[in-house]
Image 1 (cartoon, rainbow, N blue to C red):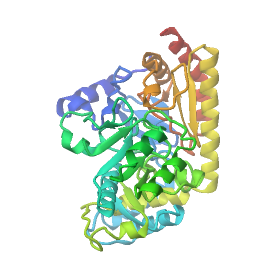
Image 2: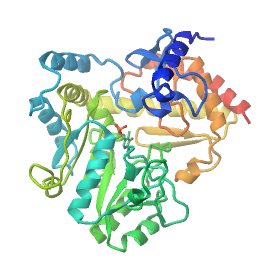
Image 3: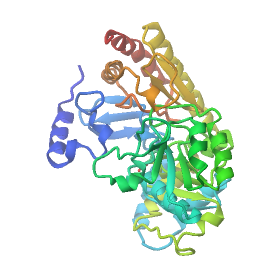
Amino acid sequence: MVSVTQSQQWFARASAVTPGGVNSPVRAFGAVGGTPRVMARGKGPYLYDVDGNEYVDLVCSWGPLLLGHTHPAVIEAVNKAASDGTSFGAASPLETELAEEIVARVEPVDLVRLVSSGTEATMSALRLARAHTERSKIVKFAGCYHGHSDGLLAAAGSGVITLGLPSSPGVPTATTAETVVLPYGDISAVRAVCQSGDIAAIIVEPVPANMGVINPGNFNRELREVCDAHGTLLIMDEVLTGFRLSAAGWFGVEGVAGDLYTFGKVMGGGLPAAAFGGRADIMTKLAPVGPVYQAGTLSGNPLAAAAGLATLRNATAEVYERIDAISATIAKLAETALREAGVPHQLSQAGNLFSIFFADGPVRDFDDAQRQNTAAYAAFFHSMLQQGVYLPPSAYEAWFVSSAHDDQAIDRIATALPKAAQAAAMTR
Ligand SMILES: *Cc1c(COP(=O)(O)O)cnc(C)c1O
């Protein structure tokens, strides 16, 4: 048994001053049970907790760490930026260089505005879409996550065409009434709703990855057609997929253009940076050029811009090839181990993103995803953790790799998997 005394002590201290002891809910291990590990540092593919235990990290800060922990170029860039000043409250070069990098990579993005979180990016993109179309309703899909702003927390809805109900207390019904929630992949439902001509925008994760990973098939192309037919804007939420699935995110893989885009995670290189951008005729409606207000004290922060820029500049073609190869290898190892142990599972992939559903049948939407054996996942998770592999502490998440995951890290995963698969098999 690894010792977790220090983690327990820190978590007790945290719980005395912070609700649930965490600053973002999944970190609390609620879905898998047990004491969360309190992390002290990271290096390459590894995380080290406060007791000194080492883990191969398959969370990678939920996506941002494309190059692994403490990549020398990123740390150097942040140190240099910090020594020049942490914030100016005025225009500065690094933010412009980061914006140039984004615009150069993602063809449908003419102009981009930097913010500090993905939540802010999607919230701002929606405001802009509503102003541009002079319509107020939006469509989102059940199981897609777009941050925690009120209007986007509407997640559930039974039947085909459902007015959103708040999925968190504290979200006014009036707010979510403007959000139509549809089942992911149901293009006839989308057509039926958009017919009315009063939908400002459809917001979608071009590869849903917050209910586990779902391959979009032809859905983005179909959404593009419906949007064009009804003057509805298509917002591609690439906060998770952006600059991870390819140099130009999922757009670079698939080529279906959105009108607006949101980015985050990788583009901040582990510091708080996010963005929204898109067509110039829409983006120029933003203040100070246009009337749509949007602002931020720390937007375009030089440290965050430096980390993001260093990450993107080091995310070469070789890095993407490596990430594709590593994730294919890990996915295959996991699948083999689960098959050999007789654990029902579905490997679900899109580009280099993957997750494993502990389920019998194919997973195409949120309803399917909820038919998982979460107890089996919890057993699997804890066995991996004991053996020094840190998986997402929830069955509904993608497994994230970095270009720093070398053969040694992959060997650790390969060695741990059979025993973990057996632990999962025992839960039935
Ligand atoms: C993580 C995520 C967000 C929210 O980003 P935060 O920086 O956590 O606010 C929004 N959309 C998608 C698709 C995400 O994965």
